[in-house]
Length: 90
Image (cartoon, rainbow, N blue to C red; front, side, top):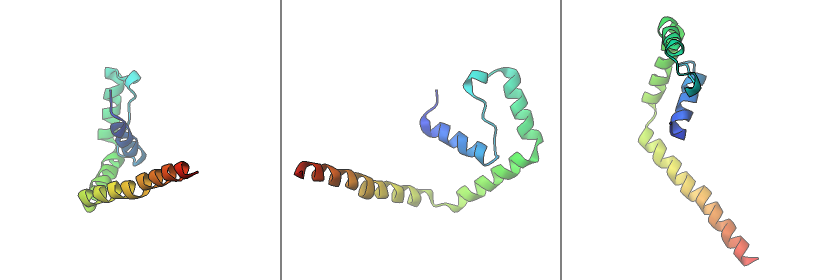
């Protein structure tokens, strides 16, 4: 079984035109072979995968991750704490 973030990553790859997602219920040798053949024979998949690669190389993932975590802590958790305090004061 896959973790949720793995499923999200697969969805993004498919949406970008860089891959084909084969649902687990369709994991049959023939289906997987057809998907691999499509990806290796259709240059659009490679082109789109290269675009994703280039985009990922431009992103400072450590900095972006840290910023997202702090944004969540400050805004989301802070909002929930404020809501809890407000509810307790009523």
